[in-house]
Length: 195
Image (cartoon, rainbow, N blue to C red; front, top):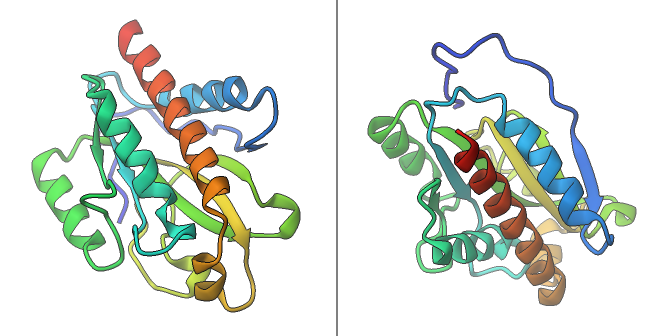
């Protein structure tokens, strides 16, 4: 389920961004891309960051790690759902979507999730327009979520996905979570101060 844009102008295309997390210019490139995507929202729409994943899997804890870091910021410019303490995962995703829609149907959703990909892309962070499809890498049918999404490619997909997620290096996930959290915080805060 994606949220309608209500009275927003016709959607404009944003170019997707994909950057290696350890690239020296990763943060400025990701912040620029994130701000481009955020600029598409109408000024009246508040921002909700939904960090998807579980603390029970090393590879899949990227979202909750990002959420925990962002929640500590206590920013007035965005709301955070999905932390290590209260994760948003397969079992409660639809409930979370329903409660968000009931509480604030105009919210602009930034979805954050881990994903699997090609070996050459492991360690990359991607920003794209539109919803993320959680669980797609492990063949789960979960509702799509987000007006934009940020994903971190934590490991190689295509074979024994659950095992691969469980055996992902925590150092990589922590490093990517730190970068994504800083990207989101800087981007949304800068946009909030300008409006």
